[in-house]
Length: 434
Length: 67
Image (cartoon, rainbow over all chains, first blue to last red):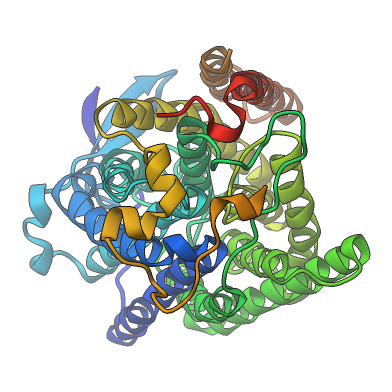
């Protein structure tokens, strides 16, 4: 293991491009707001305040952990890194950035913007398992999960994919297209978040009464469709910003290519929600609001990988397929795999992200790109899930993820905050779900 | 059983990596086949983990034995 210089030096950025990307990144937190609202709406009313306060706390903890630890491991493209030398190739696997963001103000403009992008990305990734653990994950546990994800899980992947790590060098070292392509975080944010969600849900277990013995899974619908659907609209604005900024930062796309990336983002989400609308209409007789929201979000997630690479018609097709897959997978995970995921994040962010990565590889013009995407997916699944499960299992030993049964019975708001989000409303008793 | 599945998954990842090292770029078919085998091993590990989760879930249904 020796420090090595990455060959992926970012090009010089013009002042206009710098301003454009900065403005986009100031809009990108709308994606966080959208996901937080969706998570809250899909949970129960007696946990709504805890869910939204948890989202705030998780964003804060993720940002602090990334600043103190994660940014060092993520490193910067063209900066120093730790490399393993194997088969005559350098496998750059860990960044060595400055500690505690030292010298950030004097860093090159692309490096500063890249770091800002990563701060927002890690916050979004950390919100994903929080939605899956709704109604039973403790606030401190959610923060601990976010801290571990931001300090260790996300930086490793961000370095591999964006900051000159071995996945981004697959093209140079092994003639696999342009290396692993993930311009707006389909892998580094969404699939990582979904794998974290799966690990957290496995460790914490289902909500009380969700899977009664000898019976079907109990339906526990979200408590506020308005939050969910308004969250989808907020998320669109954030996603547009993420996808366009990512295209500039990580694909070095020219300004003329950016409107197409934005149009592709919208088309992917639109295709997905239309497909989910049709699937749920056929399946249940009426369209399902929360599944349509999941479909919309899965279209956005798929666009994170592909929007800057494909044509508009291809983007629409990607969205349509994501929209068909998502409601089916949500059902399969719940009924066949007994995975209690109130926000549907594992299907939306996991399957949507993987589908987007595959589609981007299949439709990219470079030869060998599809194989590069497969290798990246193999790294995510083969290393990511076991590592995240181990980390969260350790977290659970010191900070139990799940609330006690009494807390679950009275609701997370009363148990953790001492007051509910809707003090004037009558809250359902647990018996109403049986 | 869940842990066994999770332990199998990195084996699939190393198979995918081995494809890059063992086969040159001039032999893309073999490379792709090896990488796909690696992914198949990962999927097998994931299936075993899900089965393990289902088995562990059965006695805990309804959250009755949780603290």
